[in-house]
Image (cartoon, rainbow, N blue to C red; front, top):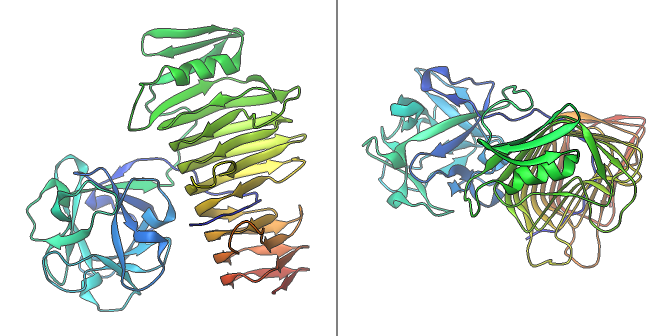
Length: 431
C-alpha cells in the first residue's frame, strides 16, 4: 500500500457520461467500459504497467487504469490502449477462458485487434480478430477482480459493454439529479422530488438538507445540485456520505474563523464521492477535506482564496484505512496560505495536468501531468520522505514545462521516471 503527500495545482478536462454506439467510436475520445452484467469497469489490475498484466473488472471509479482509447488498425478493427500504461488489450491465444492481458502494441498482432458488435440498449461486444471470440466476464462474476476472458459470442449480458465517453462538455447543473438546493429572492429552498426539505437563508443548511434527503443505504451514486451563491462559516461544513455526487453551480464564500478539519465540502470514511463543480472564495481552513476515502473524483474545482488550504486528501488518524483511487481533473487554487492540494496516505493518484508546485511524500503509484502543463512559481517540485512510511516509489513526472523552479529528489525514489520535462531557467537535482 502507499502513503503520499502531494501539493499541486492542476487543470484538466471535465468528465461527462454520454454513451457511445459502435458506429460512433471516436479515436480522440477516452472511454470507460462498463459490463452490463456486473456493472463494473474494465480495469488494469493493481495499476500495473507490465507486459502480460491481467485486465479484470473493478468497481467503476474512472481512474486512469479504467480509461481506454481506440487505435484504428484496418478493416474495422482497433487496438484498445490503456491510458494508464500505454499498452493494449490482448488475448494470448484462442482458448476459452484465457485471461485478458495488456501488452506492448505490436504491428500485425491480430490477438490485439478487436471490432465492435452492437447489442441492444447501446451496449457492444468486443470481438477478437485472432479467435473470433468475444470478451466475457468469466463465470458471470460480479466480484471486484473478476476475470475478463473470451468465449464464443452468445450475446450474453456478461459479454456486453457500455462505452462511456469521458471528456465531453457538460454545463454545471445539467443532467439528472435526485435533490437540489436553489437560491431565489434571498431564500434557499431544498427539494427532493416534490418534497421541500428546507427553506431559509442558510446556504450550508440548504445544501446539507438536500444531501441528507438522498436514499439511505444507497449503493450507487445519487446527485445533488446547488444553484446559487452564498456564504458559509469557516467553522462549518457540508458533509457528503458514500455514493454522493455534488454539483455546486455558484460560489461559496467562506468567512470567519474555525478550527479542526472544517471545510465547505467534507467527507470521511466514505467511498464513491464526486465533486463535479465547486467555486470557493474567502479563507477556509480547507476548501475540500477528504479523509479515509476511496474512489473519489474531483472535477471542475476553482478556488480563489485569501488564505487557508485548498484541497486536503489523507488517511490521518486511521492509517490502516488507506485513501485509494483518487482522480483530480480541473483544479485551480490560488491565494492559499499553504498547499494548493495536499494528500497524505493515498494509494493510487492520477492527475492529468499541473500548473503549480508539487510536494510528494511517501508516495506510491502516482502519475503527474500525463496531459502536460506548465509549473511556474509557488515553490518547487519536491520529492521527500517522512519516517513513518516507506519512501517514494513508482512516480512518473512527465510532459510539462518547468519555469523558474526546480525538481528536487531527496532522499532517493524507487522507480522514478522523469520524461519530456522542458526546463526554463530551472534545474533537476537527483539524489
